[in-house]
Amino acid sequence: MNVLAIESSCDDTCAAVVQGDGQVLANVISSQGVHSRFGGVVPEIASRHHLELIDLVVLQALAEAGLSLDDIGLVAATRGPGLVGALLVGFSYAKGLAAAHRLAFAPVDHLQGHVAANFLRTEQGQFEPPFICLIASGGHTLIAHVREREGFEVLGRTLDDAAGEAFDKGARMLGLGYPGGAALERLAAGGDPAAFDFPAGGARPRAGMGVGRIEFARSLDFSFAGLKTALLYRVRELSESELATLAPDLAASYQAAIVDSLIARCEQALKVTGLERLAVGGGVAANGELRRRLASMGATVHVPAPILCTDNAAMIASAARFCSALAYPAYLPLDVYATGESAA
Ligand code: KG4
Ligand code: ZN
View 1 (cartoon, rainbow, N blue to C red):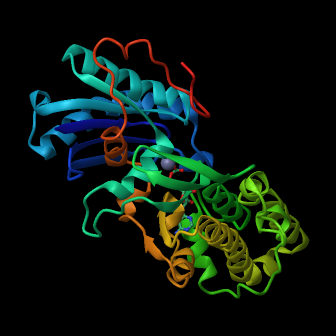
View 2 (cartoon, rainbow, N blue to C red):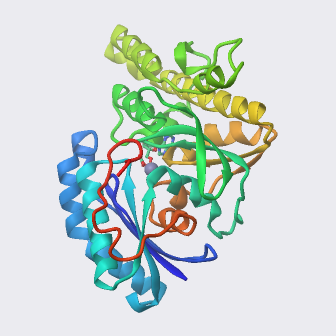
């Protein structure tokens, strides 16, 4: 069975066609590229662009797959979390398309999608549960215990900024553009990661934690607010010329602090679950320092291709294969959700 999926939770308009066995037939991503001048994604602008692009992106996905709607057995779309206006465009379009053709429809959680990117058939092979999954992007950061393909348990999540957001805000303070993760990494390459001792705060695990269920879960939460403030104060203390000289050291130390906290949480999650398998998703998975540290952890690490790590619809189609789809017209009243899972 072929799945046609749509993802529009942020600023990328995405459509993909995936076979029931996880083979990706098409994975189209239209990045809007209009938000950088504002230093972040502007929700209303993102929604309007989704409206303009969605039809073309879906048609292109079908064309690339060499299929028509008659060949599609299931339509899927991201239901949340994300920007409500952006989600609404893709979700409503997908429901309408499914309804018009009397097809079944699968509402998919965006984070479940990131996890399910690992189940796709790719050059790196499929990665099967059980494993720990780190999802670190501009919008979310969490550690999940993936026991089966149908769901996951959150072991820890960010209490404030996402890891990618921390990279972006750091990059902004250092005068780099948006999104700034990759630029900050390039700047950091010429710097000393030990030059500045940025605070561990809540962002790195404290000794003695990890005893008992609740303590354990809380010890795996992330916080990047203290780190961000520390960089801000450092930058404010410096003159323009000092900042120009020290920017690589600041970037390297800041990056090291983010990567340290991600790695520490992964190590803890593996230890407490007794697993030795780790998957990584989200835009921050592109970070070379994170990849180097992951590779030296001693666990089996699976990082999907970059195009499957960042937001895409193939991962949504992949997740849809394992969730209970709704027959027409049961899905028509469904609405999107901005945060958390909707009860409706
Ligand atoms: O998954 P993604 O494309 O979109 C969201 O769902 O947010 O992630 C984008 C995030 C941005 O915050 C970006 O700065 C970050 O991933 N990012 C990086 C790198 N490349 C992208 N962060 C650190 N190092 C990189 N090389
Ligand atoms: Zn995402």
